[in-house]
Amino acid sequence: MLALLLNQSVYMRKWLRTAYILPLVVPVASIVFIWQAFFDWNGTINAWLHSWGMNRVDWMNSDWAIGVVTLIYIWKNIGYNVILLIAGIQSIPESYYEIANLEGARSFTKLRGITLVYLMPTMFFVVLMSIINSFKVFRETYLIAGDYPHDSIYMLQHYMNNMFLSLDIQKLTAAASLMVGSIMIIVLGLYIMERRFRNFME
Image 1: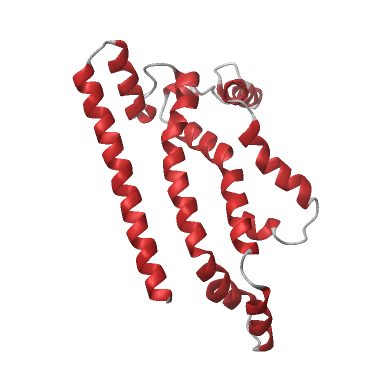
Image 2: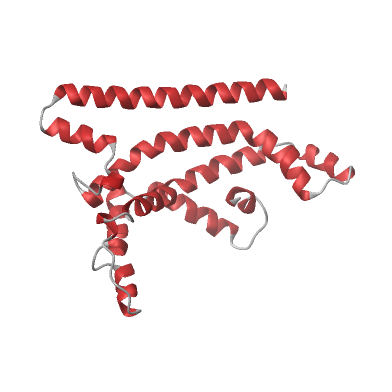
């Protein structure tokens, strides 16, 4: 939806595109510092809650932790996905839309029958990159919550890092093999789905 919006002539489109690109160029340490300022016990959000007469929330040591990490992941990666989807939208020939207009097709029909169909390969790639990037969110989680965070955000990379520090090579190797196997299964599954969809379209 954001890619479709930014592909139109909307107000402040250039500034909005720049805003989505900024998280890609900001160093991880700076990102962590900003989010700590928001979600720390004495951070901005808890200060607002306290001013409204509500109890403070220990965001990173409660069930809210997974929500915070998810929010960080979306904010960090949404710009990259939007850029890819805009490129995919702009690669669709305008003649397809012109023919649809001549035949009296509505906007939703053009979106479903043209945009989404020809954007599907790009969407598969975006989903694949998003899954791969989800394994990288460990950096932010580690810098915010440390070696042993809340159970909801204790990732496989935390386990691998802790096993490395304790020099437990067997468990470290098993965890690394599990991660590689999981990524390979996901990539293979998406690749098979993309091939079947392409063959169906042909």
